[in-house]
Image 1 (cartoon, helix red, strand yellow):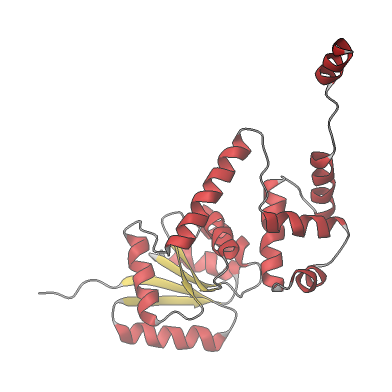
Image 2: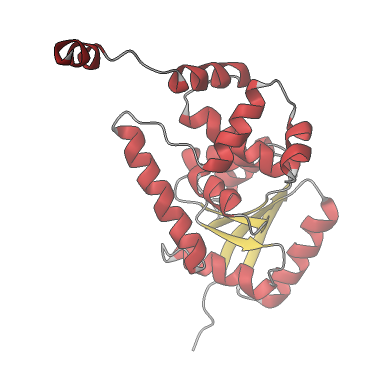
Length: 227
């Protein structure tokens, strides 16, 4: 019986040691074949177009990771993006899912987990815990509310948005809320997207307008008629 064909993968990380080490381990494993690696989003897109891999293994620690995921998912939808080194935060997983990942492996994940994530993605499956699945369902509900004209921010996103309104930097927000700077960046990305804002100041302004009490003339008439 012939051996199953290896799934072609591309590794994206700005750390050469990470790229080289993962390439060697995966090629020795035999179930995946690393066709190339890239240290930047621009090079990753070129390599995806050239090699047409089944999956891209993307280190989420690279600068502008969410933007890179989005670009690959948009320009090469047949290629599945697997986020590597993702934290356990529900917000981080949901943000990456919104950007376009087809799977993820946590920071404590093994080579076996990487292989499983790639194989699951090839079968159009998304392996995750029940907790993460529940978070994704909540996000789908939120998107549905957005389509009906309501903007729904999570409690944490609202906290971050309020601090944006105070003019705090990402580092200052992370200190205030006791969360990582990378997590703050994820929240800011989601807030801008949900509010359809192009800057932090615009997002803060839109949030202030949303929270402003609205005049209800119908109530005024009702009170007047009751007196």
